[in-house]
Length: 140
Image: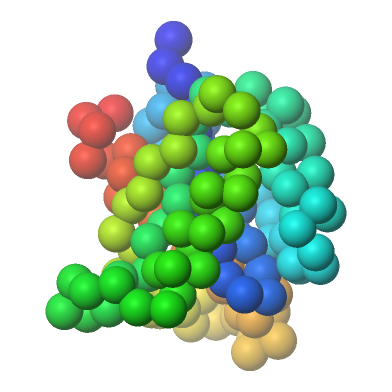
């Protein structure tokens, strides 16, 4: 059996969360965490890691279109470092997330969701796109 991967789209206000199926073939959106403070955010992630028996974490890296790193990447890397210290031995992998939010927005527009509904699920859908791209690249 393959391992389950937790996919995260980390923003300053929310964290979009997706998880792979037990075989590691498909990504499903599970929630959007509305960020409060570090300990609360981490507690939410720890619950999900235990609930889904996650064996690795994939974090979307918001590179600029030219591939360089900006302030958002620094924020995401800082969050990941802090999270690694808290959660322990679970491997953390970064994945280029350029255009994932745009792709998620297009998908939600095609589904004809209202702006209010899109706003509620956009980060979760971005996490699905990020995780699915990673799973596909692994030949799963």
